[in-house]
Length: 147
Figure (cartoon, rainbow, N blue to C red):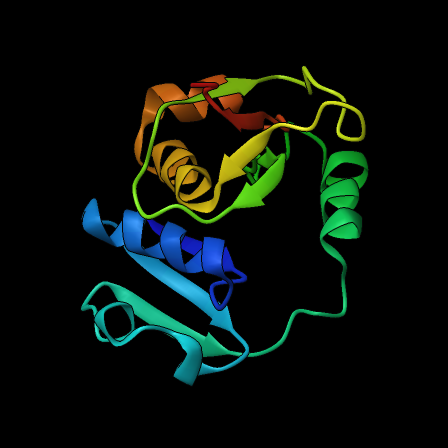
C-alpha cells in the first residue's frame, strides 16, 4: 500500500510523512515545493514526490465534499478526516484523546493539540488495521490529554 499525503509542505504534514516513513510504509506526497521538504524526508527511499498545488479547494470544502458526495462506503476511496483543536508546536509526542465529535467548545473552551500528536494519530490510522477499522469514514476529533 502507498499512502497519499496532501499538504506535506505544512508543519503537520511533514510530521505525518516522517511518522509514516519511520513505520516502513511507502508514501507519495503532493507538495507545492520540493525545496520545503526536509532532506531526511525528501531523500527517503519509500517517498515519491509530486510537485503540484491543491490550493484550489479549502480544507473545509474538501472535507465536506468527502462527507456529502463520497460518503463512508465508497469502494474506491477510504478516508478519515482528523479534526484537531487549536494546534500547537511540540517536539515530542504526548498522550492524547480521540473522540467521535468535539467534547469542548472551540470558542469558549478550546482545547489544544500538538501537530506531532496529529501526525502520530494519522500514522496510527494508516499503519494500524485496528485504528483504521475504528475511524474509517469518520471525522474524529483529537485533543492533547490535559496534564
